[in-house]
Image (cartoon, rainbow, N blue to C red; front, side, top):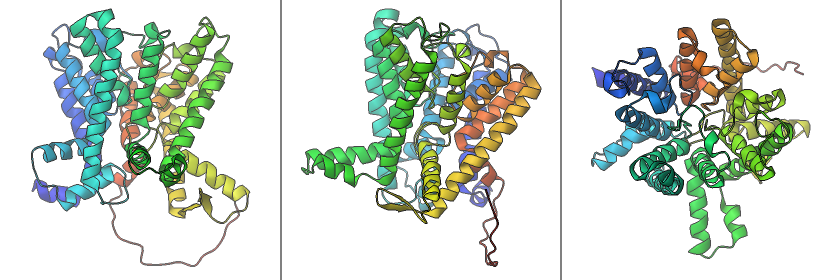
Length: 456
């Protein structure tokens, strides 16, 4: 019966239900007494919120992670972060591979959809690459963190902090064990800032980009290709991702630096070099990590508007980040430029991007913004307060960012439920939820006559 039910579901529905099931299992475990530091039951809504923010790698919290949860509870949170970062389907398939189980065609099709790929070729090999790369980067990050955390917290606690924060940063979760103020105590520590930014970018840039860059290194050092030829051989997806990511990080950092330069509530009291590193960290963490080195509630409104923009875009496809993704934003920008220049086709680096991709990018953006407006209106009606803070909260949740203007701890039951839904839809994608409820697989067999309309 169970197998029959599964066959009736689309891959989108299976993935969405997989995330939902993991969230509820995590919530039931976290509400048990041995998961809290004082040995009492955690209210289910708070456990559900924590499980959702972990699986959806967001970082918004309604209880203090460092003080509320026991060691066992924190280990459960870490497992949920790792599951959510890699993707439930990817993780389960990986376990099947380790156990020696055969990966069937239906498993491969499900994995293809989970990783948002367009081909089954080399799928299992690509999954192995993801697991190996993730393990290497997270361990490397933990070792780098240990140079600071071990002297500060001792050997055992320092190693635990190093591992937890490395996984949390790589998975773009933004959940920390340092207290209520995230990484603010390390705002002037260049090493911690650089390692955290490296891990955030590594996780958020996308696994396909990793693979493409690694293949480029092999072509250069093993096959002797010139650096220029290696760049030319990069996929169009990789080129657009790297260029867009660089523009957003450096452009965002510059604007934050200029707007917040004299703001004593954020970076105004820092040294010149401290302002630069804090501006870069803020630009990186907005896409979509959730760590912070200064209070978000003190941001000037111009910076808040910039934060909305960066959080909506988020990271890159087939990675651990959320948002509409860098390639989606780049596609919309490039297609708009093509229309303005009266071009019939969207050509980038001598490659023609299909019209279907442009249409999908438009749909993703419109559905995401529509849901953002609905969620912001609902949260404002439920909680009141400043609309600036409300929109910041919902944008952060839908983009799976995890930054807040001190609004999350004030949420009541209905507000928590709204943010839980936002985090969940942000992780699986609002458009995936639309597809979830539309399982009509029939093809259009009728073609109607064309008639143009006037727009603009």
